[in-house]
Length: 413
Image (tube, rainbow, N blue to C red; front, side, top):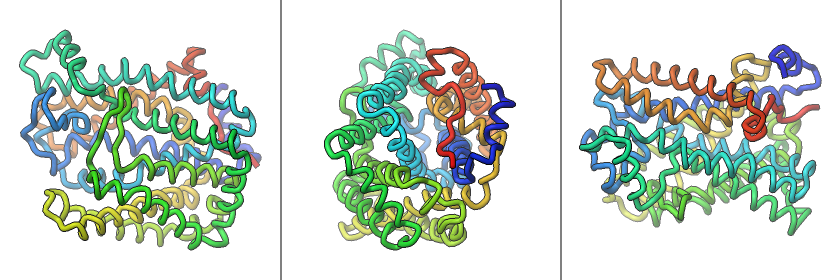
């Protein structure tokens, strides 16, 4: 599809405001993802002294590069994104499931998801992540040679996933949805009918989401802490969150089955009308969660405080997630050339951006520049280089089949 054709398609009156808003939201979300990984090198709370590449707690998995220059504003930004951003990604991913299942049915849907998610994941952890993490090894090793890096990587008690853990967990949830479709064909339509009531009964809908989220998240967060990760073969898991992400994924499946033009995601619906209230709620719940969590970080909090801190994460996650959706429905529902391009390339950008983020952080490490200058340089450089790779990949037939050869609208009226 030529760019002129794409602009005409986006501007077509057959494309709903909700579809356009969600396409723009995908562009905004990938900007937040790149920004989040960019700023992790410059947060204040990360200690300067670190263990070696082969020594626990392997902090380089989350912080490959730790710069001496820091800025507290990045701590606030990263804390907020950590609370809601991945839940939002799973919710948005769920919106596609039911229309795709109806169109392709079971086996074709399964084959498509294995191709579009499974193959990029395997390529990513075999090639992209090792390439991205070499700087993390280089700054911690006495011998930074590529040969020694490869030996050190193979000697680890796990295989690093980087941000690609999202891809395999998304694949797993798609497989669950496919199995549910095969075993209980009426389950997803029922979920869609229930989700369609969100516009008229928002308290009931959000009450159910919050209750399920609390049951899915809080017990695991209390037992294992919110920060614990584990590895099962080539798969990395943040122990307290997979069930929470499943709640948001299937919430998205339900909304997608109900039809995004009405109910919760209607352009003039309750989210769009209450965006200011959601902003207030998102900020309030964020700071409550931050305050309570600060009491538990060093492990000295009582069980009661630990439970309350875990529970406080749940409304903070929901408020942040639905606030960003509300803002896009209210203010970003018109076609945008930039956000549309980013949205169409969001998957490819997610797959490759980490390489450029970590390497640019590494290149800027010795420069005596403030974090407020380094971070924008890393962000812009990573975004531009990732977009070049994404566009180039889509010119190759097989890669285009994996990441999408043209813009995919979420829905049309």
